[in-house]
Image (cartoon, rainbow, N blue to C red; front, side):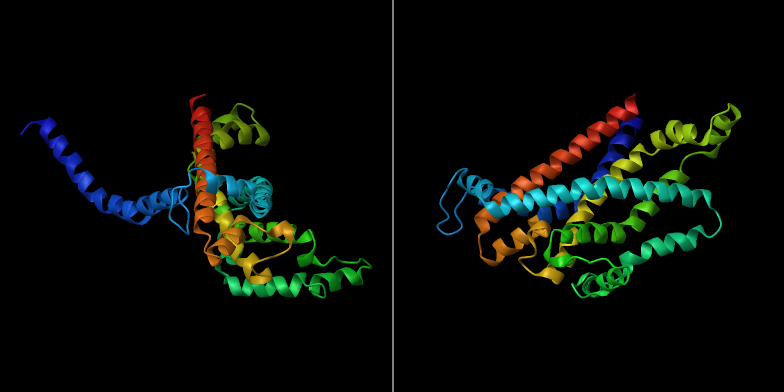
Length: 287
């Protein structure tokens, strides 16, 4: 048996091991999403082919515009803030060897809190007569009605940062741990300071981790709908009306054609963003 034949057999064995995963992805993701794409071109009532009419209806819908604008605003604020804050805290934690595991556990604690408990915390803190406004009154400040004004959007932002900060910190710490200490030692021997070591060594070596963390943070951002829906229901204050609220309402109304078209648009935008991020990181690695 030649070496070439052995290599071919190993490749076939590898494909056989991957086949169950491919079948699962195809059965539970590719085929259903293909059906969503098909439904976006047909009427939900008559099942007639409507072309791009569903997409036109979605883009002309005021609720979709509001939800898309709020969701985009939410991610543009939350993702940079979360990535930056978690990176800074992770760097500080890696330098503080004593008690690092306890501090990491403290940051991860919000992820372990059930959603129902988080909702209860929201209601206690951010009600118009809640704890936060009571504390502001003690300081002679008049607090807003947090959940019924534009301030509700920033409540959503704070909740997202609070729940996901620890998760990103752990990912950053793993990336920082993979950087050889000899690089820092050599740089310090050459007279490099802390800032130069961070810019020239830490950041370039964290690019693969950065791509993973940004993508996971983006996907985790869609989970914030749970808290928003449990606190404010199907129709919350306008500033926190997200795409998930829209999909939920259209599903309840059985507007499957509009929901399918909106899902295709949303999925396409997310895919393009991820591909652009991947291209940017690959370009950064080649420099």
